[in-house]
Length: 526
Image (cartoon, rainbow, N blue to C red; front, side, top):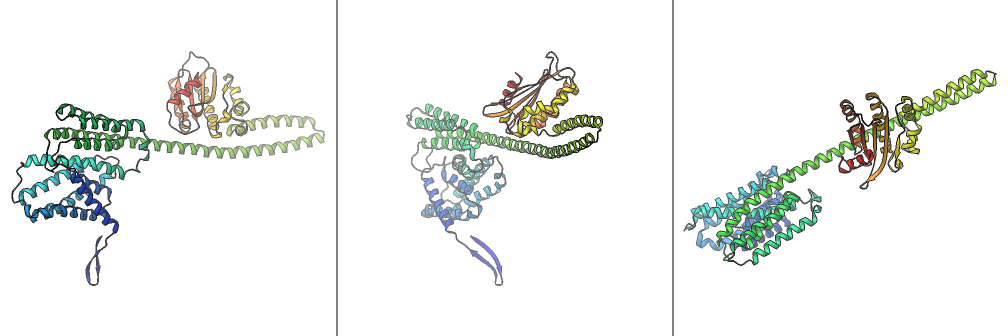
């Protein structure tokens, strides 16, 4: 690496050579040399090698790529000095890599995003700039300018460089971002392999098609775009990074060639123009799909994090309530012991009537105290489960005093659910019943069912008007969704108000409501 530093003697130039950088330079030079052997003006692979190398290597290693480029041009163009002149050999070789490196550098901010549409800009800019440098040098510096018109040469070279850049830069970009979405390769494995196999099959059929059937061959080449479209729809820009290079390579293999870089086939050139448009469309489509998929994944992760935070907050609140309830129970037990001692003393001194009255009053107040403590936190739920807590706690006594509650229907085994879910169901049921008792008239019925759907355990709570001909008011339905949705969503469920009932689903995992949520709600409402 080259560096500048100041010292007492003045400005000093330091040069540090890394062995790995020399290896990169050699590999790059060999890759360009080998790619040129299989290239045409309308499909010039070294242009793709240049951009792909700049994408794969970090900027600190670009000087070694420049060294490899100069080595490649030296072995190729030094023998041409006698024919084209020294000025062209030097100037035509020294500007290409710096120009393309500057183009890639100007797009580096865009590279950090999820979209890869910037690659089209890099490919088009690099193809135009490199073609302009090559044509300007050949027409100004060659002793005899080329006989091919400038417009024809520019069209061939721009299209050839553009297609070659997409062919090699897309796999390079796929390699550099191989860890950005590791799970993409596990999606649609069978359809992906089928699409790749179909592309190869169509490519083989185009290769073996007789040369005289040019129309059929062109049709087969265009049909190869269908598997590429399927790959793009399945994997976004990564699918396009697989399909587009396959298309371009197969078209290149089927192109008739004289073996010289200047060889040209007009019919294949027309097909390449169509494929260039298809490549642009596929990359743009795939980039959009990947971008919106990433946005959806980000929102989904944020939603899961918010639900987990809400669930943790509710659990923390329950822990505080549990401590208070245990403290109240301890205080109640202490008061019972003290009253028992007072009753015993009164009885020992002959105050039997006073002792009986005090005993009766203390028993009634102790029962009410315990009912209120159980409504603060149902400690019996931890040992006996949700259903027994509902049947023996203060919530049951409160319902009976209202004279508006029918006998609840309880189905399933709640003990298979975690205590957190059972406690959330207890709170949700209490809130739902209180809401309907305050907002509606008439008798209510409660139906609770625990079960499993698609390996997912959950509980469905239905609080409904006993009169099936009545319907919940819009104000009651809106209030139920507002008050009950927070806990339901925190436990991966949903709230639904239909006709005369409010249905609430709670599940073991805090996941967004989906199809099986509807299935559980229908099961509980049946």
